[in-house]
Image (cartoon, rainbow, N blue to C red; front, top):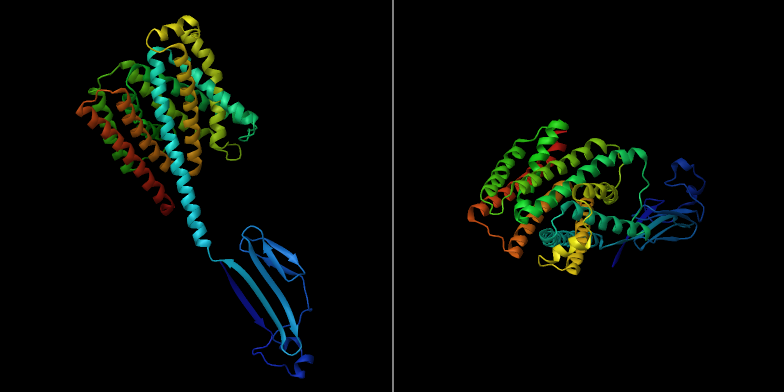
Length: 411
């Protein structure tokens, strides 16, 4: 329903016939200067669109708001200026529905992010159990992502970026850190339980604070440092009581934390020119392609060429036939790229602290689902250590949110 606002501007204080004396009086004594009978008008809506018209009405096509404005003259009553505008009553309701739709969209994207993470970790662990070549598997997964990106660019499903030489030089260190981070994570997943790898990777905030202080000169707040105490203590407790503990798996997961947080530091130090930076999705796409180019020769150098019938048959001898191995590898590659792309899309819609809280919840979901699916033996002390570590991540996220809110006040 539309409500109409009507404004009258009278040429005389009261609606009464004018005396002939006023017709020839000086304009400075007249309440208004008589205008022509019909004059071009500006019709303006709440969206700011205006249109010069000589007719008596206009309309905003964006909000379906009708605007009428006219000037009429009556020789008996002087000039009356009338402006009428139809304004939607449901503006508040529209904003509420828009906020609700955005919340539902975000909730759906977070759900997809978590679900893809669960499936990736399950498929990836199943493949690594029977095909223990993490460099080859990582190169294959990044290759799947590269193919998906090229298809999306070819079909114009997303904008293809036009890269300059300075951009490529700035992105290259990010791609190198991204490559090592994913490779080291897969090495860890191949050696220890999924739940243990993700418990160790919960230490990422510790390295974030460490590198931000060393390379960016940032001083952490007291509550940020306090949140690291249960985080570090929980990871240590979980490591001491982990049934599947393996030094290669432990060190690889720790090293992946170092490389991933180095990537974040590089992104802050190098991608400082906003005019030259890419949006999050395109940045991730370019990093993925560069990672594929780097990983193919690295995988061949580290492990040799493993896509041969004999190596595939060895995987079949361990309980997973060649067809199932290929299907699960493809699914793992699809989920690997998709969940990271959804993560970057979410990061474009929310602030980094909210994204960090969501990442903490994601880690909880992945740990619980992997323990249930693989029936990983977990001792009570190990459970307490994991819970402490995840609580530390959550407290860290909350402390960062408080810090981000107090910054404007301090300024």
